[in-house]
Image 1 (cartoon, one colour):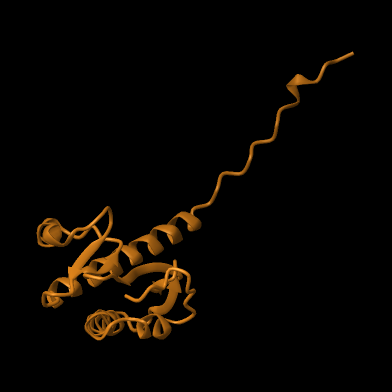
Image 2 (cartoon, rainbow, N blue to C red; image 1 turned 180 degrees about the horizontal axis):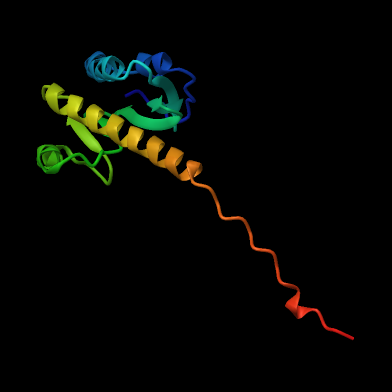
Length: 148
Protein backbone atom coordinates (compact mmCIF):
# COMPACT_ATOMS: atom_id res chain seq x y z
CA UNK A 1 0.00 0.00 0.00
CA UNK A 2 1.22 3.49 -0.73
CA UNK A 3 2.09 5.67 2.18
CA UNK A 4 -1.39 6.70 3.26
CA UNK A 5 -0.99 7.12 7.01
CA UNK A 6 -1.92 10.81 6.80
CA UNK A 7 -4.63 10.37 4.17
CA UNK A 8 -8.22 10.20 5.37
CA UNK A 9 -10.33 8.12 3.01
CA UNK A 10 -13.93 9.04 2.34
CA UNK A 11 -14.88 6.04 0.19
CA UNK A 12 -13.84 2.45 -0.27
CA UNK A 13 -13.06 3.19 -3.91
CA UNK A 14 -10.66 5.92 -2.83
CA UNK A 15 -8.90 3.48 -0.47
CA UNK A 16 -8.67 0.79 -3.13
CA UNK A 17 -7.34 3.25 -5.73
CA UNK A 18 -4.16 3.71 -3.68
CA UNK A 19 -3.24 0.01 -3.81
CA UNK A 20 -0.78 -1.76 -6.11
CA UNK A 21 -2.51 -3.86 -8.78
CA UNK A 22 -1.97 -7.31 -7.20
CA UNK A 23 -3.14 -6.15 -3.78
CA UNK A 24 -6.06 -4.28 -5.32
CA UNK A 25 -7.16 -7.39 -7.24
CA UNK A 26 -7.15 -9.53 -4.07
CA UNK A 27 -9.01 -6.96 -2.02
CA UNK A 28 -11.60 -6.62 -4.79
CA UNK A 29 -12.17 -10.38 -4.75
CA UNK A 30 -12.77 -10.37 -0.99
CA UNK A 31 -14.98 -7.31 -1.30
CA UNK A 32 -17.10 -9.01 -3.97
CA UNK A 33 -17.42 -12.18 -1.89
CA UNK A 34 -18.76 -10.10 1.00
CA UNK A 35 -21.16 -8.19 -1.24
CA UNK A 36 -22.54 -11.41 -2.76
CA UNK A 37 -22.99 -13.07 0.62
CA UNK A 38 -24.50 -10.02 2.31
CA UNK A 39 -26.23 -7.82 -0.26
CA UNK A 40 -27.90 -5.80 2.51
CA UNK A 41 -24.57 -4.89 4.12
CA UNK A 42 -23.52 -1.26 3.90
CA UNK A 43 -20.01 -0.53 2.71
CA UNK A 44 -18.26 2.18 4.75
CA UNK A 45 -14.87 3.51 5.74
CA UNK A 46 -14.24 2.94 9.43
CA UNK A 47 -10.90 3.42 11.18
CA UNK A 48 -9.74 4.62 7.74
CA UNK A 49 -10.15 1.16 6.16
CA UNK A 50 -12.97 -0.52 4.21
CA UNK A 51 -15.67 -2.10 6.34
CA UNK A 52 -19.13 -3.56 6.04
CA UNK A 53 -22.00 -2.91 8.42
CA UNK A 54 -25.05 -5.11 8.74
CA UNK A 55 -28.08 -4.36 10.89
CA UNK A 56 -26.39 -1.19 12.12
CA UNK A 57 -23.41 -3.15 13.45
CA UNK A 58 -19.88 -3.64 12.17
CA UNK A 59 -19.56 -6.90 10.29
CA UNK A 60 -16.13 -7.14 8.64
CA UNK A 61 -13.15 -4.84 8.15
CA UNK A 62 -10.62 -5.19 5.31
CA UNK A 63 -7.13 -3.78 5.08
CA UNK A 64 -4.27 -3.99 2.61
CA UNK A 65 -0.66 -4.17 3.71
CA UNK A 66 2.65 -4.55 1.91
CA UNK A 67 2.69 -8.35 2.03
CA UNK A 68 -0.85 -9.36 2.97
CA UNK A 69 -4.48 -8.36 3.16
CA UNK A 70 -6.32 -8.66 6.45
CA UNK A 71 -9.85 -9.35 7.60
CA UNK A 72 -11.01 -8.31 11.05
CA UNK A 73 -12.41 -9.51 13.43
CA UNK A 74 -12.18 -13.29 13.42
CA UNK A 75 -15.59 -14.84 14.00
CA UNK A 76 -15.84 -17.71 16.49
CA UNK A 77 -17.11 -20.29 14.02
CA UNK A 78 -16.82 -23.95 14.92
CA UNK A 79 -13.87 -26.23 15.77
CA UNK A 80 -13.16 -27.13 12.13
CA UNK A 81 -13.20 -23.44 11.19
CA UNK A 82 -10.82 -22.58 14.03
CA UNK A 83 -8.36 -25.23 12.80
CA UNK A 84 -8.63 -23.95 9.23
CA UNK A 85 -7.72 -20.38 10.14
CA UNK A 86 -4.74 -21.21 12.38
CA UNK A 87 -2.15 -20.72 9.64
CA UNK A 88 -3.70 -17.34 8.70
CA UNK A 89 -4.04 -15.80 12.13
CA UNK A 90 -1.99 -12.67 12.54
CA UNK A 91 -2.56 -10.74 15.72
CA UNK A 92 -5.45 -10.88 18.09
CA UNK A 93 -8.62 -10.92 16.01
CA UNK A 94 -6.81 -10.67 12.66
CA UNK A 95 -6.66 -13.02 9.70
CA UNK A 96 -3.85 -12.37 7.22
CA UNK A 97 -3.80 -13.64 3.65
CA UNK A 98 -0.36 -13.35 2.01
CA UNK A 99 -0.41 -11.51 -1.29
CA UNK A 100 2.04 -13.99 -2.80
CA UNK A 101 -0.34 -16.94 -2.28
CA UNK A 102 -3.75 -17.75 -3.78
CA UNK A 103 -6.71 -16.56 -1.74
CA UNK A 104 -8.49 -19.35 0.15
CA UNK A 105 -11.91 -18.38 -1.23
CA UNK A 106 -13.77 -21.21 0.52
CA UNK A 107 -12.31 -20.16 3.86
CA UNK A 108 -13.16 -16.51 3.21
CA UNK A 109 -16.75 -17.52 2.48
CA UNK A 110 -16.85 -19.31 5.84
CA UNK A 111 -15.46 -16.22 7.57
CA UNK A 112 -18.26 -14.17 6.04
CA UNK A 113 -20.87 -16.80 6.92
CA UNK A 114 -19.81 -16.97 10.57
CA UNK A 115 -19.51 -13.17 10.78
CA UNK A 116 -23.08 -12.77 9.51
CA UNK A 117 -24.28 -15.44 11.95
CA UNK A 118 -22.66 -13.63 14.89
CA UNK A 119 -24.05 -10.31 13.68
CA UNK A 120 -27.59 -11.72 13.61
CA UNK A 121 -27.14 -13.36 17.02
CA UNK A 122 -25.98 -10.02 18.46
CA UNK A 123 -28.93 -8.19 16.91
CA UNK A 124 -31.41 -10.79 18.16
CA UNK A 125 -29.81 -10.78 21.60
CA UNK A 126 -30.11 -7.00 21.77
CA UNK A 127 -33.76 -7.12 20.65
CA UNK A 128 -34.48 -9.75 23.27
CA UNK A 129 -32.84 -7.67 25.98
CA UNK A 130 -34.69 -4.53 24.90
CA UNK A 131 -37.95 -6.46 24.81
CA UNK A 132 -37.71 -7.52 28.43
CA UNK A 133 -39.66 -5.30 30.74
CA UNK A 134 -37.79 -3.69 33.55
CA UNK A 135 -39.25 -4.04 36.99
CA UNK A 136 -40.72 -0.78 38.17
CA UNK A 137 -38.92 0.86 41.05
CA UNK A 138 -40.57 0.04 44.32
CA UNK A 139 -41.85 3.05 46.19
CA UNK A 140 -39.61 4.10 48.99
CA UNK A 141 -41.24 3.39 52.28
CA UNK A 142 -42.13 6.16 54.60
CA UNK A 143 -40.75 4.19 57.53
CA UNK A 144 -37.90 6.63 57.97
CA UNK A 145 -40.26 9.48 58.78
CA UNK A 146 -40.17 10.49 62.39
CA UNK A 147 -43.35 11.03 64.27
CA UNK A 148 -43.70 14.01 66.57
